[in-house]
Length: 608
Image 1 (cartoon, rainbow, N blue to C red):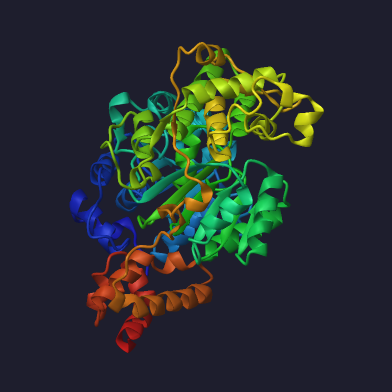
Image 2: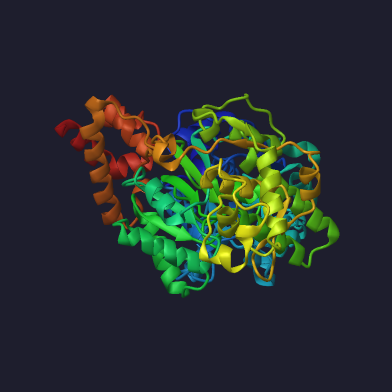
Protein backbone atom coordinates (compact mmCIF):
# COMPACT_ATOMS: atom_id res chain seq x y z
CA UNK A 1 0.00 0.00 0.00
CA UNK A 2 1.22 3.50 -0.81
CA UNK A 3 -0.23 6.99 -0.77
CA UNK A 4 -0.24 9.69 -3.41
CA UNK A 5 -1.72 13.20 -3.47
CA UNK A 6 -4.38 12.07 -5.93
CA UNK A 7 -5.98 9.95 -3.19
CA UNK A 8 -7.15 13.18 -1.52
CA UNK A 9 -7.53 15.56 -4.43
CA UNK A 10 -11.22 16.26 -3.85
CA UNK A 11 -10.94 17.36 -0.21
CA UNK A 12 -9.96 20.81 1.16
CA UNK A 13 -6.35 21.44 2.14
CA UNK A 14 -6.66 21.37 5.95
CA UNK A 15 -8.64 18.11 6.15
CA UNK A 16 -6.31 16.55 3.57
CA UNK A 17 -3.26 17.41 5.67
CA UNK A 18 -4.89 16.10 8.84
CA UNK A 19 -6.02 12.92 7.09
CA UNK A 20 -2.45 12.29 5.86
CA UNK A 21 -1.12 12.93 9.35
CA UNK A 22 -3.39 10.22 10.74
CA UNK A 23 -3.48 7.73 7.87
CA UNK A 24 0.19 7.79 6.89
CA UNK A 25 2.01 8.80 10.05
CA UNK A 26 -0.38 7.54 12.72
CA UNK A 27 -0.69 10.81 14.66
CA UNK A 28 -4.01 12.16 15.91
CA UNK A 29 -3.09 15.85 15.86
CA UNK A 30 -0.43 18.36 14.96
CA UNK A 31 1.97 19.70 17.58
CA UNK A 32 3.09 23.27 18.23
CA UNK A 33 3.44 25.30 15.03
CA UNK A 34 3.30 22.29 12.68
CA UNK A 35 -0.20 22.98 11.38
CA UNK A 36 0.48 26.63 10.53
CA UNK A 37 3.79 25.84 8.83
CA UNK A 38 2.23 23.00 6.85
CA UNK A 39 -0.70 25.20 5.79
CA UNK A 40 1.70 27.92 4.65
CA UNK A 41 3.84 25.53 2.59
CA UNK A 42 0.79 23.90 1.03
CA UNK A 43 -0.40 27.39 0.06
CA UNK A 44 2.97 28.07 -1.61
CA UNK A 45 4.52 30.34 1.04
CA UNK A 46 8.19 30.16 2.02
CA UNK A 47 9.17 29.42 5.62
CA UNK A 48 12.18 29.16 7.92
CA UNK A 49 11.26 26.87 10.81
CA UNK A 50 13.41 26.87 13.96
CA UNK A 51 12.14 23.91 15.99
CA UNK A 52 13.84 21.76 18.63
CA UNK A 53 14.96 18.25 17.75
CA UNK A 54 12.16 15.77 18.33
CA UNK A 55 9.40 18.33 17.73
CA UNK A 56 8.42 16.98 14.31
CA UNK A 57 10.25 19.26 11.86
CA UNK A 58 10.25 16.62 9.12
CA UNK A 59 6.45 16.46 9.06
CA UNK A 60 6.43 20.14 8.14
CA UNK A 61 7.59 19.23 4.63
CA UNK A 62 6.57 15.56 4.45
CA UNK A 63 2.86 16.28 4.86
CA UNK A 64 2.83 19.09 2.24
CA UNK A 65 4.77 16.78 -0.09
CA UNK A 66 1.79 14.41 -0.02
CA UNK A 67 -0.72 17.22 -0.61
CA UNK A 68 0.95 19.37 -3.29
CA UNK A 69 1.30 17.97 -6.83
CA UNK A 70 4.76 16.90 -7.94
CA UNK A 71 7.85 15.66 -6.13
CA UNK A 72 9.26 17.37 -3.06
CA UNK A 73 13.02 17.92 -3.17
CA UNK A 74 14.70 17.55 0.21
CA UNK A 75 18.25 18.89 0.40
CA UNK A 76 20.13 17.24 3.24
CA UNK A 77 23.84 17.34 4.15
CA UNK A 78 24.56 13.69 4.91
CA UNK A 79 23.91 10.40 3.15
CA UNK A 80 23.10 8.58 6.39
CA UNK A 81 20.43 11.12 7.27
CA UNK A 82 18.83 10.86 3.85
CA UNK A 83 18.82 7.07 3.85
CA UNK A 84 17.34 6.93 7.34
CA UNK A 85 14.51 9.28 6.39
CA UNK A 86 13.78 7.33 3.22
CA UNK A 87 13.73 4.04 5.12
CA UNK A 88 11.24 5.42 7.65
CA UNK A 89 9.00 6.92 4.96
CA UNK A 90 9.01 3.76 2.87
CA UNK A 91 7.86 1.78 5.93
CA UNK A 92 4.89 4.17 6.11
CA UNK A 93 3.95 3.67 2.47
CA UNK A 94 5.39 6.94 1.15
CA UNK A 95 7.14 6.92 -2.23
CA UNK A 96 10.54 8.27 -1.22
CA UNK A 97 14.07 7.79 -2.57
CA UNK A 98 17.52 9.31 -2.42
CA UNK A 99 20.13 10.07 -5.04
CA UNK A 100 23.64 9.96 -3.62
CA UNK A 101 27.10 8.63 -4.43
CA UNK A 102 26.27 5.31 -2.77
CA UNK A 103 22.90 4.70 -4.45
CA UNK A 104 22.87 1.26 -6.03
CA UNK A 105 19.65 1.92 -7.96
CA UNK A 106 20.22 5.49 -9.13
CA UNK A 107 18.98 4.67 -12.65
CA UNK A 108 15.60 3.54 -11.35
CA UNK A 109 15.39 6.54 -9.02
CA UNK A 110 16.03 8.89 -11.96
CA UNK A 111 13.29 7.20 -14.00
CA UNK A 112 10.81 7.34 -11.10
CA UNK A 113 11.61 11.01 -10.56
CA UNK A 114 11.15 11.95 -14.21
CA UNK A 115 7.94 9.92 -14.42
CA UNK A 116 6.47 11.64 -11.36
CA UNK A 117 6.42 8.44 -9.31
CA UNK A 118 8.10 9.90 -6.22
CA UNK A 119 6.56 11.92 -3.41
CA UNK A 120 9.93 12.93 -1.98
CA UNK A 121 13.47 12.85 -3.39
CA UNK A 122 16.40 13.42 -1.02
CA UNK A 123 19.61 14.85 -2.48
CA UNK A 124 22.81 16.44 -1.21
CA UNK A 125 23.45 20.15 -1.90
CA UNK A 126 26.27 19.12 -4.27
CA UNK A 127 23.87 16.95 -6.29
CA UNK A 128 21.20 19.66 -6.33
CA UNK A 129 23.71 22.17 -7.70
CA UNK A 130 25.02 19.92 -10.48
CA UNK A 131 24.19 21.00 -14.05
CA UNK A 132 22.48 17.75 -15.00
CA UNK A 133 20.21 17.77 -11.98
CA UNK A 134 19.29 21.41 -12.48
CA UNK A 135 18.26 20.74 -16.07
CA UNK A 136 16.21 17.70 -15.05
CA UNK A 137 14.39 19.65 -12.33
CA UNK A 138 13.33 22.26 -14.88
CA UNK A 139 11.44 19.52 -16.78
CA UNK A 140 9.82 17.93 -13.71
CA UNK A 141 6.95 19.09 -11.53
CA UNK A 142 8.37 20.09 -8.14
CA UNK A 143 6.06 20.29 -5.14
CA UNK A 144 8.41 22.14 -2.79
CA UNK A 145 12.07 22.48 -1.80
CA UNK A 146 12.95 21.56 1.77
CA UNK A 147 16.41 22.56 3.03
CA UNK A 148 17.19 20.48 6.11
CA UNK A 149 19.90 21.36 8.67
CA UNK A 150 19.61 24.91 7.37
CA UNK A 151 22.15 26.27 9.87
CA UNK A 152 24.76 24.88 7.45
CA UNK A 153 24.07 27.87 5.21
CA UNK A 154 25.34 30.41 7.70
CA UNK A 155 28.95 31.29 8.31
CA UNK A 156 27.89 31.73 11.94
CA UNK A 157 26.38 28.24 12.06
CA UNK A 158 28.28 25.51 13.88
CA UNK A 159 28.33 23.21 10.81
CA UNK A 160 28.96 25.76 8.04
CA UNK A 161 28.80 24.26 4.52
CA UNK A 162 29.74 26.69 1.69
CA UNK A 163 27.63 24.71 -0.80
CA UNK A 164 24.50 25.71 1.09
CA UNK A 165 25.13 29.36 0.22
CA UNK A 166 24.62 28.53 -3.47
CA UNK A 167 21.13 27.12 -2.94
CA UNK A 168 19.27 30.40 -3.32
CA UNK A 169 19.81 30.64 -7.12
CA UNK A 170 18.70 27.00 -7.38
CA UNK A 171 15.47 27.85 -5.56
CA UNK A 172 14.99 31.12 -7.49
CA UNK A 173 15.16 29.17 -10.76
CA UNK A 174 11.90 27.45 -9.73
CA UNK A 175 9.44 30.37 -9.33
CA UNK A 176 6.23 29.48 -7.54
CA UNK A 177 7.82 26.53 -5.73
CA UNK A 178 7.79 27.16 -1.98
CA UNK A 179 11.02 26.72 -0.05
CA UNK A 180 11.09 25.62 3.58
CA UNK A 181 14.31 25.71 5.58
CA UNK A 182 14.53 23.82 8.86
CA UNK A 183 16.97 23.66 11.75
CA UNK A 184 16.96 23.00 15.48
CA UNK A 185 19.85 25.31 16.30
CA UNK A 186 20.22 28.96 15.40
CA UNK A 187 20.69 32.03 17.56
CA UNK A 188 19.27 35.39 16.48
CA UNK A 189 22.23 36.29 14.27
CA UNK A 190 22.30 32.87 12.60
CA UNK A 191 18.55 32.94 11.96
CA UNK A 192 18.82 36.27 10.18
CA UNK A 193 21.75 35.03 8.10
CA UNK A 194 19.92 31.83 7.08
CA UNK A 195 16.88 33.80 5.93
CA UNK A 196 19.03 36.27 4.00
CA UNK A 197 21.12 33.59 2.28
CA UNK A 198 18.07 31.55 1.23
CA UNK A 199 15.89 34.47 0.19
CA UNK A 200 13.26 33.97 2.89
CA UNK A 201 11.58 37.11 4.22
CA UNK A 202 12.12 37.96 7.89
CA UNK A 203 8.39 37.75 8.57
CA UNK A 204 8.39 34.13 7.33
CA UNK A 205 10.49 32.86 10.25
CA UNK A 206 8.73 30.56 12.70
CA UNK A 207 10.42 30.09 16.04
CA UNK A 208 8.78 27.45 18.21
CA UNK A 209 11.22 27.40 21.11
CA UNK A 210 14.40 25.60 22.03
CA UNK A 211 13.45 23.84 25.23
CA UNK A 212 13.83 20.06 25.40
CA UNK A 213 12.15 19.39 28.75
CA UNK A 214 12.71 15.65 28.53
CA UNK A 215 16.52 16.09 28.62
CA UNK A 216 18.24 16.37 31.99
CA UNK A 217 21.40 18.50 31.91
CA UNK A 218 24.25 17.49 34.23
CA UNK A 219 27.73 19.04 34.37
CA UNK A 220 30.71 17.94 36.45
CA UNK A 221 34.40 18.76 36.59
CA UNK A 222 36.84 16.19 35.29
CA UNK A 223 38.67 14.32 38.02
CA UNK A 224 39.24 10.73 36.93
CA UNK A 225 37.59 10.40 33.52
CA UNK A 226 37.59 6.61 33.42
CA UNK A 227 36.03 6.33 36.86
CA UNK A 228 33.49 9.07 36.09
CA UNK A 229 32.38 7.55 32.78
CA UNK A 230 32.01 4.05 34.21
CA UNK A 231 30.09 5.41 37.21
CA UNK A 232 27.72 7.19 34.85
CA UNK A 233 27.34 4.10 32.66
CA UNK A 234 26.40 1.98 35.68
CA UNK A 235 23.11 3.88 35.70
CA UNK A 236 22.50 3.52 31.96
CA UNK A 237 22.50 -0.27 31.65
CA UNK A 238 20.73 -1.52 28.53
CA UNK A 239 20.39 1.98 27.03
CA UNK A 240 21.67 3.29 23.70
CA UNK A 241 23.81 6.40 23.93
CA UNK A 242 26.58 8.53 22.47
CA UNK A 243 29.82 9.55 24.15
CA UNK A 244 31.65 12.44 22.50
CA UNK A 245 35.43 12.61 22.93
CA UNK A 246 37.52 15.58 21.78
CA UNK A 247 40.12 13.49 19.88
CA UNK A 248 40.34 10.31 17.82
CA UNK A 249 42.68 8.76 20.39
CA UNK A 250 40.17 9.63 23.10
CA UNK A 251 37.38 7.76 21.31
CA UNK A 252 39.50 4.61 21.09
CA UNK A 253 40.56 4.85 24.75
CA UNK A 254 37.05 5.39 26.09
CA UNK A 255 35.62 2.68 23.84
CA UNK A 256 38.24 0.31 25.24
CA UNK A 257 37.20 1.14 28.80
CA UNK A 258 33.57 0.36 27.99
CA UNK A 259 34.26 -2.90 26.18
CA UNK A 260 36.51 -4.03 29.02
CA UNK A 261 33.66 -3.26 31.45
CA UNK A 262 31.24 -5.39 29.43
CA UNK A 263 29.34 -2.76 27.42
CA UNK A 264 28.56 -3.00 23.72
CA UNK A 265 30.49 -0.07 22.29
CA UNK A 266 31.92 1.06 18.95
CA UNK A 267 34.36 3.87 18.06
CA UNK A 268 33.65 6.37 15.30
CA UNK A 269 36.08 8.98 13.99
CA UNK A 270 37.56 10.25 10.73
CA UNK A 271 40.67 8.11 11.16
CA UNK A 272 38.72 4.89 10.62
CA UNK A 273 38.18 3.48 7.13
CA UNK A 274 34.88 4.50 5.57
CA UNK A 275 33.64 0.90 5.54
CA UNK A 276 34.32 0.49 9.25
CA UNK A 277 32.57 3.77 10.07
CA UNK A 278 29.54 2.73 8.04
CA UNK A 279 29.40 -0.66 9.73
CA UNK A 280 29.69 0.83 13.21
CA UNK A 281 27.00 3.37 12.42
CA UNK A 282 24.67 0.68 11.07
CA UNK A 283 25.26 -1.44 14.18
CA UNK A 284 24.44 1.50 16.42
CA UNK A 285 21.29 2.53 14.54
CA UNK A 286 19.99 -1.06 14.62
CA UNK A 287 20.74 -1.58 18.32
CA UNK A 288 18.75 -0.83 21.44
CA UNK A 289 21.68 -0.86 23.88
CA UNK A 290 24.88 0.09 22.04
CA UNK A 291 27.14 3.02 22.92
CA UNK A 292 28.83 4.97 20.13
CA UNK A 293 32.05 6.65 21.25
CA UNK A 294 32.76 9.32 18.69
CA UNK A 295 34.26 12.62 17.71
CA UNK A 296 31.90 15.30 16.42
CA UNK A 297 32.26 13.65 13.00
CA UNK A 298 29.32 11.50 14.15
CA UNK A 299 25.77 12.53 14.79
CA UNK A 300 24.20 14.99 12.38
CA UNK A 301 23.14 12.19 10.06
CA UNK A 302 21.59 10.09 12.79
CA UNK A 303 17.81 10.07 13.13
CA UNK A 304 17.79 7.39 15.85
CA UNK A 305 14.97 8.43 18.22
CA UNK A 306 15.77 6.12 21.16
CA UNK A 307 19.19 7.50 22.18
CA UNK A 308 18.84 7.74 25.96
CA UNK A 309 21.99 9.67 26.81
CA UNK A 310 24.71 11.87 25.36
CA UNK A 311 27.91 12.23 27.38
CA UNK A 312 30.54 14.82 26.52
CA UNK A 313 33.99 13.78 27.75
CA UNK A 314 35.24 17.29 27.05
CA UNK A 315 33.84 20.63 25.95
CA UNK A 316 31.97 21.02 22.66
CA UNK A 317 33.18 23.89 20.51
CA UNK A 318 30.23 26.21 21.20
CA UNK A 319 26.91 26.51 22.96
CA UNK A 320 25.14 25.78 19.65
CA UNK A 321 27.22 22.65 19.12
CA UNK A 322 26.41 21.53 22.67
CA UNK A 323 22.69 22.07 22.08
CA UNK A 324 22.79 20.25 18.75
CA UNK A 325 24.81 17.31 20.08
CA UNK A 326 22.80 16.84 23.27
CA UNK A 327 19.66 17.11 21.13
CA UNK A 328 20.49 13.73 19.64
CA UNK A 329 19.23 12.22 22.88
CA UNK A 330 15.53 11.71 23.51
CA UNK A 331 14.24 12.51 20.04
CA UNK A 332 11.26 10.26 20.81
CA UNK A 333 10.23 12.52 23.69
CA UNK A 334 11.10 9.98 26.39
CA UNK A 335 13.45 10.96 29.25
CA UNK A 336 17.12 11.37 28.36
CA UNK A 337 20.33 12.57 30.02
CA UNK A 338 22.97 15.01 28.78
CA UNK A 339 26.12 14.59 30.90
CA UNK A 340 29.13 16.86 30.43
CA UNK A 341 32.55 16.26 32.05
CA UNK A 342 35.05 19.07 31.57
CA UNK A 343 38.43 20.37 32.66
CA UNK A 344 40.30 23.64 32.49
CA UNK A 345 42.47 22.38 29.65
CA UNK A 346 39.31 22.14 27.52
CA UNK A 347 38.80 25.88 27.84
CA UNK A 348 42.44 26.45 26.92
CA UNK A 349 41.98 24.28 23.83
CA UNK A 350 38.92 26.26 22.72
CA UNK A 351 40.77 29.54 23.14
CA UNK A 352 43.73 28.30 21.13
CA UNK A 353 41.47 27.08 18.31
CA UNK A 354 39.83 30.49 18.07
CA UNK A 355 43.16 32.32 18.17
CA UNK A 356 44.64 30.07 15.46
CA UNK A 357 41.60 30.42 13.20
CA UNK A 358 42.11 32.16 9.85
CA UNK A 359 38.70 33.81 10.20
CA UNK A 360 38.14 37.55 10.28
CA UNK A 361 38.32 39.51 13.51
CA UNK A 362 34.52 39.72 13.48
CA UNK A 363 34.32 35.93 13.16
CA UNK A 364 36.77 35.43 16.03
CA UNK A 365 34.89 37.90 18.21
CA UNK A 366 31.68 35.98 17.55
CA UNK A 367 33.38 32.70 18.44
CA UNK A 368 34.63 34.20 21.71
CA UNK A 369 31.06 35.31 22.47
CA UNK A 370 29.83 31.77 21.93
CA UNK A 371 32.62 30.30 24.02
CA UNK A 372 31.79 32.69 26.86
CA UNK A 373 28.16 31.60 26.70
CA UNK A 374 29.28 27.99 27.05
CA UNK A 375 31.48 28.91 30.01
CA UNK A 376 28.56 30.72 31.66
CA UNK A 377 26.53 27.53 31.26
CA UNK A 378 29.32 25.54 32.96
CA UNK A 379 29.81 27.99 35.82
CA UNK A 380 26.22 28.75 36.73
CA UNK A 381 24.97 27.73 40.15
CA UNK A 382 21.41 28.32 38.96
CA UNK A 383 19.20 26.45 36.54
CA UNK A 384 21.20 25.22 33.55
CA UNK A 385 18.17 25.08 31.29
CA UNK A 386 17.50 28.74 32.02
CA UNK A 387 21.11 29.60 31.10
CA UNK A 388 20.88 27.59 27.88
CA UNK A 389 17.57 29.06 26.78
CA UNK A 390 18.67 32.59 27.64
CA UNK A 391 21.40 32.30 25.03
CA UNK A 392 18.79 31.57 22.36
CA UNK A 393 16.71 34.55 23.47
CA UNK A 394 14.11 32.65 25.49
CA UNK A 395 12.97 33.00 29.05
CA UNK A 396 12.45 30.07 31.36
CA UNK A 397 11.27 29.51 34.95
CA UNK A 398 13.89 30.07 37.65
CA UNK A 399 14.05 26.31 38.19
CA UNK A 400 13.33 23.53 35.72
CA UNK A 401 13.47 20.56 38.08
CA UNK A 402 15.44 18.59 35.50
CA UNK A 403 19.08 19.67 35.74
CA UNK A 404 21.75 18.92 38.32
CA UNK A 405 21.56 22.35 39.93
CA UNK A 406 17.78 22.19 40.31
CA UNK A 407 17.73 18.58 41.49
CA UNK A 408 20.64 19.09 43.91
CA UNK A 409 20.92 22.85 44.62
CA UNK A 410 24.58 23.67 45.24
CA UNK A 411 25.84 25.57 48.27
CA UNK A 412 28.01 28.55 47.35
CA UNK A 413 31.16 29.37 49.28
CA UNK A 414 33.20 32.57 49.20
CA UNK A 415 36.35 31.53 47.36
CA UNK A 416 37.85 34.99 46.93
CA UNK A 417 40.73 34.45 49.35
CA UNK A 418 41.33 30.91 48.07
CA UNK A 419 41.51 32.26 44.51
CA UNK A 420 44.16 34.78 45.57
CA UNK A 421 46.15 31.96 47.22
CA UNK A 422 46.00 29.81 44.09
CA UNK A 423 47.00 32.67 41.80
CA UNK A 424 49.82 33.59 44.18
CA UNK A 425 51.03 29.97 44.11
CA UNK A 426 51.07 30.07 40.31
CA UNK A 427 53.14 33.26 40.39
CA UNK A 428 55.52 32.23 43.21
CA UNK A 429 56.36 28.90 41.56
CA UNK A 430 57.31 30.53 38.27
CA UNK A 431 54.14 30.08 36.17
CA UNK A 432 55.26 26.73 34.74
CA UNK A 433 53.48 23.97 36.68
CA UNK A 434 50.16 22.16 36.47
CA UNK A 435 47.39 21.82 39.04
CA UNK A 436 48.78 18.67 40.71
CA UNK A 437 52.08 20.34 41.61
CA UNK A 438 50.35 23.53 42.76
CA UNK A 439 48.07 21.52 45.06
CA UNK A 440 51.08 19.82 46.62
CA UNK A 441 52.54 23.26 47.33
CA UNK A 442 49.30 24.72 48.68
CA UNK A 443 48.61 21.68 50.87
CA UNK A 444 52.16 21.67 52.23
CA UNK A 445 53.04 18.29 50.75
CA UNK A 446 56.85 18.00 50.27
CA UNK A 447 56.72 15.76 47.21
CA UNK A 448 59.89 14.89 45.33
CA UNK A 449 59.07 17.48 42.68
CA UNK A 450 58.27 20.18 45.27
CA UNK A 451 61.59 19.60 47.00
CA UNK A 452 63.48 19.45 43.70
CA UNK A 453 62.38 23.00 42.86
CA UNK A 454 62.68 24.28 46.42
CA UNK A 455 59.01 25.14 46.65
CA UNK A 456 58.79 23.85 50.22
CA UNK A 457 60.60 27.08 51.10
CA UNK A 458 58.11 29.25 49.21
CA UNK A 459 55.86 31.68 51.08
CA UNK A 460 52.81 29.89 49.62
CA UNK A 461 53.83 26.42 50.84
CA UNK A 462 51.05 25.02 53.04
CA UNK A 463 48.75 28.05 52.90
CA UNK A 464 45.90 25.97 51.45
CA UNK A 465 45.71 23.08 53.92
CA UNK A 466 42.18 24.02 54.91
CA UNK A 467 40.72 23.11 51.50
CA UNK A 468 40.30 19.61 50.01
CA UNK A 469 41.92 18.77 46.67
CA UNK A 470 38.59 18.48 44.84
CA UNK A 471 37.69 22.03 45.85
CA UNK A 472 41.04 23.37 44.65
CA UNK A 473 40.62 21.59 41.32
CA UNK A 474 37.14 23.05 40.91
CA UNK A 475 38.48 26.52 41.67
CA UNK A 476 41.30 26.08 39.15
CA UNK A 477 38.76 25.12 36.46
CA UNK A 478 36.67 28.19 37.25
CA UNK A 479 39.68 30.50 37.15
CA UNK A 480 40.64 29.11 33.74
CA UNK A 481 37.10 29.60 32.53
CA UNK A 482 37.24 33.20 33.81
CA UNK A 483 40.52 33.85 31.97
CA UNK A 484 42.34 34.40 35.25
CA UNK A 485 44.51 31.36 34.50
CA UNK A 486 45.81 30.24 31.13
CA UNK A 487 47.75 27.27 29.80
CA UNK A 488 51.28 27.79 28.57
CA UNK A 489 51.01 26.56 24.95
CA UNK A 490 54.51 25.09 25.07
CA UNK A 491 54.91 23.55 28.52
CA UNK A 492 51.24 23.16 29.43
CA UNK A 493 51.69 24.75 32.86
CA UNK A 494 49.35 27.36 34.33
CA UNK A 495 50.18 31.05 33.92
CA UNK A 496 48.34 34.16 35.06
CA UNK A 497 45.69 35.39 32.65
CA UNK A 498 44.35 38.90 32.02
CA UNK A 499 41.65 38.57 34.70
CA UNK A 500 44.10 37.60 37.46
CA UNK A 501 45.19 41.10 38.43
CA UNK A 502 41.75 42.25 39.57
CA UNK A 503 41.33 39.12 41.70
CA UNK A 504 44.75 39.47 43.31
CA UNK A 505 43.99 43.11 44.15
CA UNK A 506 40.71 42.10 45.80
CA UNK A 507 38.57 43.92 43.25
CA UNK A 508 36.60 40.83 42.18
CA UNK A 509 34.72 38.41 44.45
CA UNK A 510 34.76 34.72 43.58
CA UNK A 511 31.90 32.44 44.57
CA UNK A 512 32.31 28.71 44.09
CA UNK A 513 29.98 25.75 44.36
CA UNK A 514 30.81 23.61 47.38
CA UNK A 515 32.37 20.35 46.24
CA UNK A 516 31.28 17.37 48.32
CA UNK A 517 33.99 14.91 49.38
CA UNK A 518 33.91 12.00 46.97
CA UNK A 519 33.19 9.37 49.61
CA UNK A 520 30.23 11.37 50.89
CA UNK A 521 28.55 12.05 47.57
CA UNK A 522 25.10 10.50 47.39
CA UNK A 523 23.90 8.67 44.31
CA UNK A 524 22.66 11.49 42.13
CA UNK A 525 19.96 11.56 39.52
CA UNK A 526 22.56 11.60 36.77
CA UNK A 527 23.46 8.01 37.61
CA UNK A 528 19.95 6.67 37.10
CA UNK A 529 18.82 5.35 33.75
CA UNK A 530 16.46 7.57 31.80
CA UNK A 531 13.43 5.36 31.25
CA UNK A 532 9.84 6.38 30.61
CA UNK A 533 7.39 4.98 33.11
CA UNK A 534 5.60 1.72 32.34
CA UNK A 535 2.91 0.66 34.79
CA UNK A 536 3.95 -2.45 36.77
CA UNK A 537 1.01 -4.45 35.42
CA UNK A 538 2.06 -3.59 31.85
CA UNK A 539 5.80 -4.25 32.20
CA UNK A 540 5.83 -7.92 31.09
CA UNK A 541 3.66 -7.19 28.04
CA UNK A 542 5.78 -4.18 27.13
CA UNK A 543 8.94 -6.31 27.19
CA UNK A 544 7.20 -8.99 25.10
CA UNK A 545 6.23 -6.36 22.53
CA UNK A 546 9.82 -5.05 22.46
CA UNK A 547 11.05 -8.59 21.83
CA UNK A 548 8.55 -9.01 19.00
CA UNK A 549 9.58 -5.67 17.55
CA UNK A 550 13.21 -6.77 17.59
CA UNK A 551 12.33 -9.95 15.69
CA UNK A 552 10.16 -8.19 13.08
CA UNK A 553 12.79 -5.50 12.55
CA UNK A 554 15.47 -8.12 11.96
CA UNK A 555 13.20 -9.91 9.48
CA UNK A 556 12.53 -6.64 7.63
CA UNK A 557 16.16 -5.50 7.76
CA UNK A 558 15.31 -2.22 9.52
CA UNK A 559 16.11 -0.77 12.97
CA UNK A 560 13.53 -1.58 15.67
CA UNK A 561 12.33 2.03 15.94
CA UNK A 562 11.23 1.92 12.29
CA UNK A 563 8.65 -0.71 13.24
CA UNK A 564 7.20 1.15 16.24
CA UNK A 565 8.56 3.51 18.88
CA UNK A 566 8.73 2.69 22.57
CA UNK A 567 5.92 5.20 23.13
CA UNK A 568 3.71 3.25 20.72
CA UNK A 569 4.55 -0.02 22.47
CA UNK A 570 3.76 1.51 25.86
CA UNK A 571 0.37 2.60 24.53
CA UNK A 572 -0.26 -0.92 23.23
CA UNK A 573 0.67 -2.43 26.60
CA UNK A 574 -1.60 0.00 28.44
CA UNK A 575 -4.62 -0.10 26.10
CA UNK A 576 -4.33 -3.76 25.03
CA UNK A 577 -6.09 -3.42 21.64
CA UNK A 578 -8.25 -6.38 20.66
CA UNK A 579 -9.08 -5.56 17.03
CA UNK A 580 -7.37 -3.94 14.06
CA UNK A 581 -9.65 -0.94 14.56
CA UNK A 582 -8.41 -0.66 18.15
CA UNK A 583 -4.81 -0.96 16.94
CA UNK A 584 -5.37 1.82 14.37
CA UNK A 585 -6.18 4.21 17.21
CA UNK A 586 -2.78 3.66 18.89
CA UNK A 587 -0.53 6.72 18.35
CA UNK A 588 2.17 5.97 15.77
CA UNK A 589 0.25 3.22 13.97
CA UNK A 590 -0.36 4.39 10.42
CA UNK A 591 -2.25 2.44 7.77
CA UNK A 592 0.75 0.71 6.19
CA UNK A 593 2.31 -0.24 9.52
CA UNK A 594 -1.07 -1.50 10.67
CA UNK A 595 -1.29 -3.72 7.62
CA UNK A 596 2.33 -4.90 7.88
CA UNK A 597 2.75 -5.48 11.59
CA UNK A 598 -0.61 -4.96 13.28
CA UNK A 599 -1.71 -8.63 13.25
CA UNK A 600 1.52 -9.83 14.89
CA UNK A 601 1.22 -7.30 17.70
CA UNK A 602 -2.48 -8.06 18.19
CA UNK A 603 -1.56 -11.71 18.63
CA UNK A 604 1.10 -10.80 21.20
CA UNK A 605 -1.37 -8.65 23.14
CA UNK A 606 -4.01 -11.38 23.11
CA UNK A 607 -1.49 -13.92 24.37
CA UNK A 608 -0.53 -11.79 27.38
